[in-house]
Length: 89
Image (tube, rainbow, N blue to C red; front, side, top):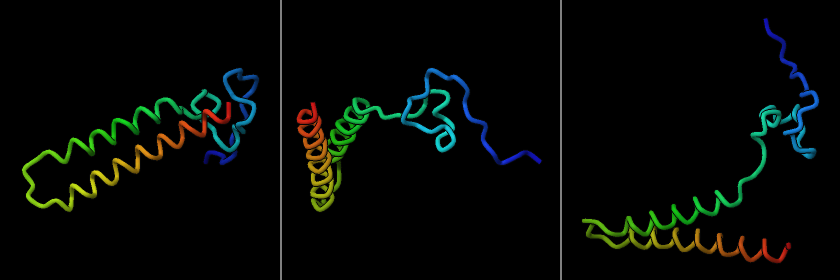
């Protein structure tokens, strides 16, 4: 049966110094980290898709309130993140 221990990566220049490969094995291949720009783009796309879903053949307006509310919340989170990241610079 295979062992359950993970072998540490040896001399891998891709691994960031703050990521422990024993805790995050994919960090050895450079798959660990954040992509803030991609997250912002995805947030805007999702919010726009929510707003696009208000156009349709439904008769009730309650779902429109939820769609617009969630879109506004996403836009608010993105704007707050942009303001905070500018202050950190």
